Length: 203
Image (tube, rainbow, N blue to C red; front, top):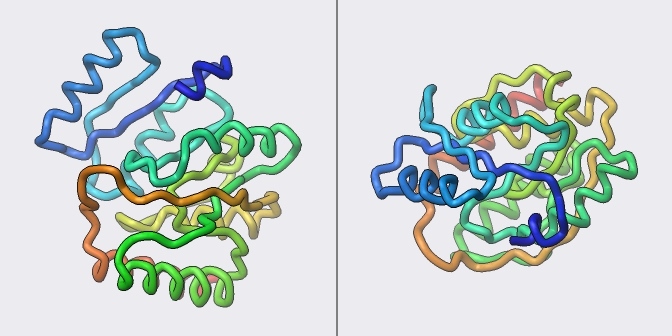
């Protein structure tokens, strides 16, 4: 609604990672109603990072946004964030201004951001934020080899090391309105932390 109201030319690519709750069928109905939604069934391995890479291959435009479907990051932020791309920023990340969720999740998020992202790898943006905009040229110029949950840190760090301008844009982070996260907090945290250490060692 936001993108259409502001007359952006856009498409929404959804990579369905083998869901069993009717998600794909609902997306097809929305597509038939004329919305610029392009749903695809997952081809490769399970995991968010692999879904993103498959979605990028399908994208038609020069500017790409990724947005978590839980809408905890506001889609309305895409507008002002896109203006930063037009003014010369190569990668713009929604920095969450507030913490929500249970105490364990908030603590894990803070530790990862402060220790692994900022101090270890020098990233001054909210690396695990669910909303990011970037130019296709950035994506095409870095070599990525993520594990299921580690696209974000690797992409941002390699873009920064390649000399691209990476900056943050502050947004209000909301509680999830419905549904439950499919992420195992412990296993995902270990995987992301290990990836951050590996990237630090490499660079």
